[in-house]
Length: 319
Image (cartoon, rainbow, N blue to C red; front, side, top):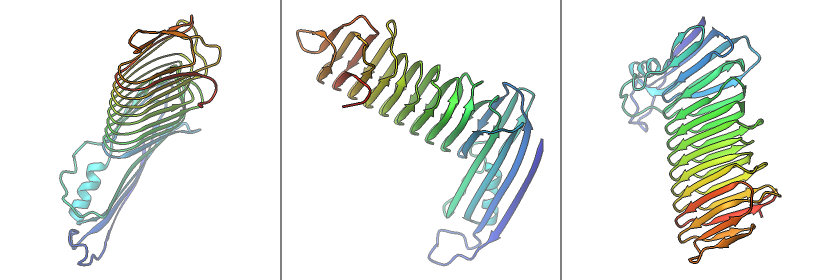
């Protein structure tokens, strides 16, 4: 492991207009670089608390880690405690690199800091398997990680973003939004969120999403889907959907928009209690107008909402 770090402190004068800031308020920075050997299939496990995490695929032979910590507006002692509490620790073996920040290690620092920034950046060969967790920190992954099956991303309130490719993807968040843009369809996509939105562009051969109020938008799908939500709006579109595949959706009040490729002949049922059903495909309507029984011989749709509208259309774009 190669390591180098710089720690700097600068005392600044603070006027009476910032009475919440200590008179001896300081700026402290930590810039640290580490490098670790990489092997095919090596796991990169990051548990970074409230640090923002960036993982990028690069043409490198090692795993390169950069840490940037900055805080301004605290006294020297509190500023140092914040730096110490956000500095990651490393545990490296042949098959696993663990990067950990201990949650709450810096303790309660009180009010007054003007700005704070905590970021962890990783450059890694595509042969590694990222597994990233934060609490409030954001997560950004860029590049192709084909060995990750799955690539796991977890956060509480931070947003997450994947721009690249991987074999399969498992994401979990409470309030953070997830923006997934892949240039190769995922074999399997799993997402669980409370109020965070989930958007997938680039496709998946199979997908499952569970959310409470977050919006769900999955595009370029090519297989079965299972979705459960309370109030989140659901928008799904397929590039390919074959007979024998199943679409199961459960929603309370969220609207459901489904678009399948031309030539697909759906079978199954679309059911809503107080919402409306609009379908471009033939079917039989129940006596109480709550259910449309599709009469095709293609993929099976099992869609049910309480008060949400259901729309099933065919074509390349939304009308």
